[in-house]
Length: 145
Image (tube, rainbow, N blue to C red; front, side, top):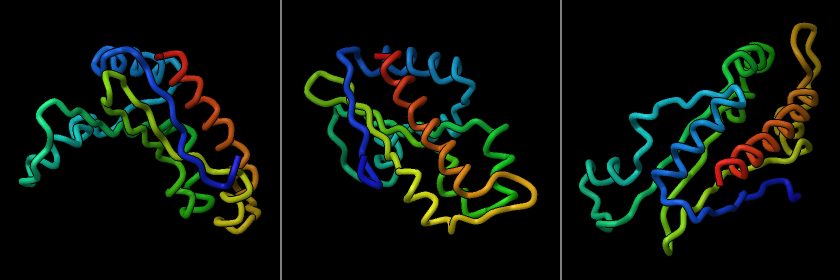
């Protein structure tokens, strides 16, 4: 994997069916979805006066596992840019497309500074755990497909 990659996958399921299955898989892995009421990007843009195609659907789901991220942030608040995960899901050519960004442990450690802490995991341990999180995100998508 390069330092940053766009995860790409798709499903033959209609977007609403995929989202229902996806939500179940997210919750089964102990994550929760946040700001669901603000996830509809088409509505967001239309509300701002931007013309959007009639049959276009695009959502941004923010997921988090608060019991983990809540422990990671006090050691190094700069981790906040990594703890919230976003999935972008949209319809295209009669398929449901799924995207998210993934980062290598090396990049995360480099950006955070490879700090050691007396209380809490080091930045390198945090970066390694994030690799597990990205693998879980892949697992969630594949189970929902």
